[in-house]
Image (tube, rainbow, N blue to C red; front, side, top):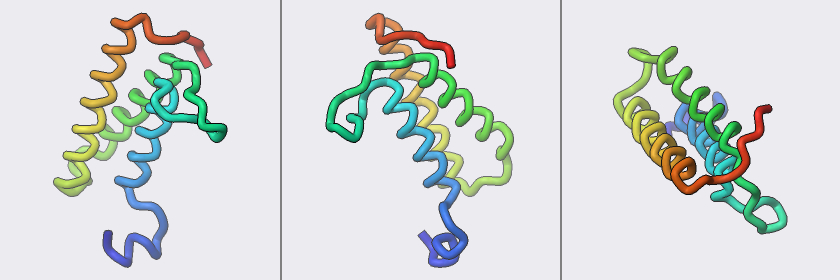
Length: 96
């Protein structure tokens, strides 16, 4: 990461990564502050996927090749994770 990016704050990739981590938490894949896995919440996970997808659409043509590839790969991974969770009957579906 370039020094200029750090001085300006969080990079686009770091922001998208944080949204991906939020989705992983919603899937129950990441432990909470107490070290315990949370209950899966597929509605929240789906919402995070939708937000990342919307950002991908809105930033199309304005991202570096590396950023675009990162978003593509993250969305693919999250969507596949969502499908697996649904197939496994994964978690509560709570509408926010």
